[in-house]
Amino acid sequence: MSLDRNKFLSQPHVVYKKSEIKSASGLNLRSSEWMILTQVNGKNSIEEIAEVASMRVQEVTQILHNLFQHGLIEIYRQEKKEENILDASFFINIEKVLTKIIGPVAPFVIEDVLSETNQSKSKFPSERVAELIELICDEIQDEQKKIHFQSEMLNFIKQELI
Amino acid sequence: MVNQWFTEIKNVPGVQGVFIASGRGTIIHNEGIKIKENELQEVAMRLLRMSAIFNEKDENVSEIELFWKNLFIICKLSNNLLLVTICDSPKILPLLRITLNVSLSHLLQDKKIMKMARNHAIDKNMILRKGKFGDDELSLLSNI
Image (tube, rainbow over all chains, first blue to last red; front, side, top):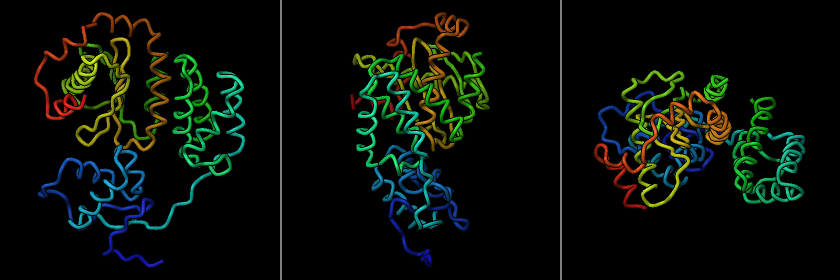
């Protein structure tokens, strides 16, 4: 696919990079624009920047559009990047650990969280595993049990995913 | 033993370093942060003041995330102790939060650290009498 570098693209998966020609020094940018500009690095997509900045994708897109108009950023990649999918054994393991902690409702809690995030066990991206664990943790009321679950899952992430 | 948990946090990609501060903003331990101590104290005081603002309204804050000088600051608060992480790119914030939760639970069991934290205990509301509010603090105050 040919890349039209003069056209701003707003799809959430698009990745921008800083311009090699123009720098932001001397420009009067707002703090939110500086913040977004620091996250533009040829790696983070629009939606990833929004997540990091705790902003809505539309807000980030608007700011990126302004930066693009100033010539400070340019398109780096417009194709969707392929995601690594979690192995099925991960869900067997997480279910086992969670059942020990909250009992037989564990599989239902996992299904609920997956459905909230519009994901399925067979296609869950591995880079979102910590987010999944955090969402499951929200369903555990007891603080000690929550930490125990996080600790077990952290060991698993370190061994298997990092 | 405590060092193991600091290393765990530092090993999370994007983390520059981690420090612990007392309830008065005194830096108890610094692991890998090359920022001057007085600046770190400023950050700690800012975090404590934010927490105190919520405390005034009887709301408890256990975590604060800040953007400061192009760096991301993630702070966990507990028992007169601040566990503060400085990151240049918090791309894996959820993983960092999990690591901080687990590390903090272990650090809170460390007698040496807890003794230092207890020695610096302070009424949270006293923090609000120190210094002046910044614009962002005032905007936060107006929202609660």
